[in-house]
Image 1 (cartoon, rainbow, N blue to C red):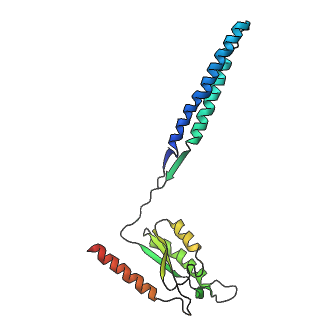
Image 2 (image 1 turned 90 degrees about the horizontal axis):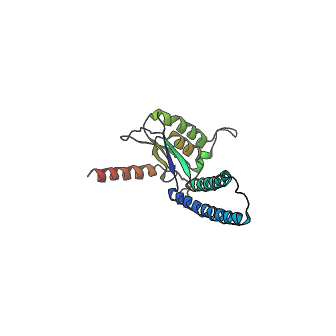
Image 3 (image 1 turned 180 degrees about the horizontal axis):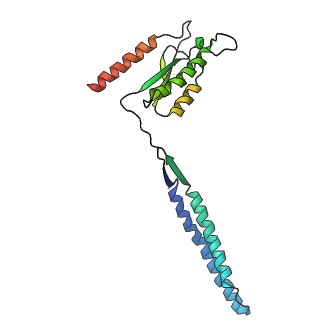
Length: 195
């Protein structure tokens, strides 16, 4: 798998700040001429020319570095992924209050066992993008199908009881009617897109 990288500036227009280097350099040149004129009037010897050039070079380099920093250089890397577009899968997990039950006080809750199964299930889909949904009295997507297994694992790990909560407080919060309404809506959407 190849990794592509590209170099870019996040704010390239900030490079115009380099023009500001002209201000201190111009001041340095004007000041040097004024000092040279006074030195000639007083009959003092000329200092080494290299010192002035070094000072000008340092000022120009400082302004150039500030302009470069303002342009915010960055390296963008990306790994191309191949994924199927002809199939997708959803793993659906019950997050109602009943999923907090455990066979023993120190045992895993139903939700923890469901999360373990969901994490083990995703790799078995191969290159099919996998999404995550939760349900209580309705099915809600937490993650749309993706081939990014790290995103899927993170979404599964973050599941908690009644998050999101059911629409109504009821003795029986989990109903499989939610699946009927979501599958009916999916069939309706498929029929309308094919016509």
